[in-house]
Length: 80
Ligand code: SF4
Image (cartoon, rainbow, N blue to C red; front, side, top):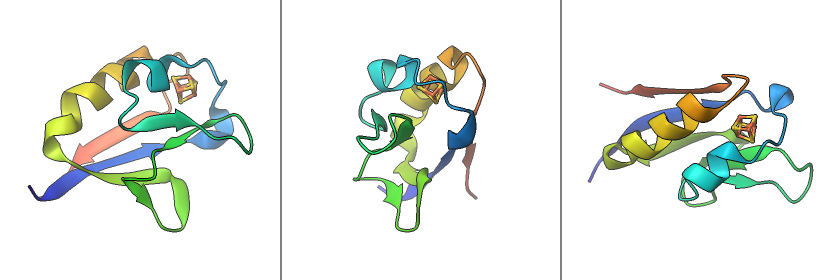
């Protein structure tokens, strides 16, 4: 399946509340370096751990995480 879903986390604003990596662990995880959310290695961009490119079928998982994020810093878009 083509990878078409772009996800970004504004990591500087993350409060480490755990909501995203608990609700969507395929895509989000806690960074062992700074304790903030980042994209899992499978989907992470090479030079930005707050950005990733995912298969479209993970959209509902990402949507749940984005809606649950208390500081609303998870954004996603379908790439044409
Ligand atoms: S839900 Fe938002 S604030 Fe909470 S850990 Fe994830 S990105 Fe950070």
